[in-house]
Amino acid sequence: MHDLAPITALGGTEPRIDTVAGVTLTEKPGLALASIAARHGKEAACRKHLKALLGSVPEPGKAKLRDPEAGFWMGPDFWMIGAPFDSHEDLAAQLVKRFGTSASVTEQTDAWAAFDLQGDGMEAVMELCCNLDIRQMQTGDAQRTSIHHLGCYVIRRDPTDWVRILGPRSSAGSLHHALHTAMKAAL
Amino acid sequence: MIINHPLLGPRDSAEFVYMGDAALIDRPDPDTASPEDWHDYAYLRDNPAGEHRELWFHEGGDRSWLVVTRNTVTHEISKVELARDVARARGRST
Image (cartoon, rainbow over all chains, first blue to last red; front, top):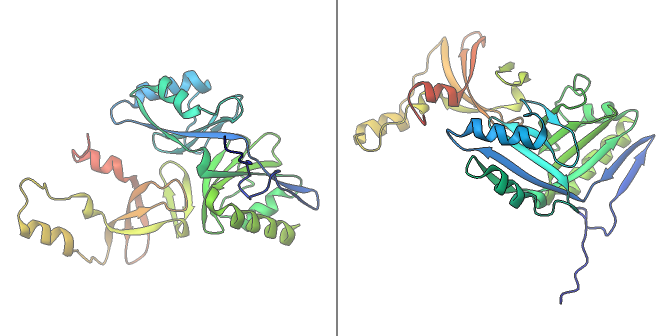
């Protein structure tokens, strides 16, 4: 039996939490992810399964925030599904079963690092980090943008002083550095 | 310059990467094309002063490919379409 200790995206045993002037940046492990790409000619069937899973199909630039499974639009006929890792470790396998041949499912859990940025002043931090018009974004909006030259998804959550940022896990340290530096600069 | 993305609305051109003449969509049929067809497809481009159809890739966004109709003299953008819609309208990948 191996005796391996799990570590977070930033390499710690506990999620990293940084607070600057009332805005908190929290590393969020524990998120299972899988992407859904509708297959050519089977878009309608895929959307039907997606609606059954989430309650509605996220349209361009939108997320469906709910428990346990949530999802957001990534591109034409392309969505990301997220759920708690503890209860949905086999999320991709569950989705393959549900979507059948209507969609191609890709395991994404270990591809992404998630950070929650929350607090009064979050908008000022995001404005320094990326091209998004963060003040126009509302709860349930999800956009892809570049932060520190890294392709990231930014999802505005409820309450509205909260965004979740998904960035490439292999660059989690760089992304964290960029966000933390922007917090110190903007706040 | 602002590109009005058909799905996401107006976006700064810095989010996009220019990927060449939209004529690249019209790839010759591999079963029937002659070497001359491939030569023309690979190397020959028009260079109009005026309206030009171009491929732009939304690298800093949703990564869709767009066909942007742009006036190379004034930089005015008159039309933006999803490249896959353009390709399918021409009978590709249907």
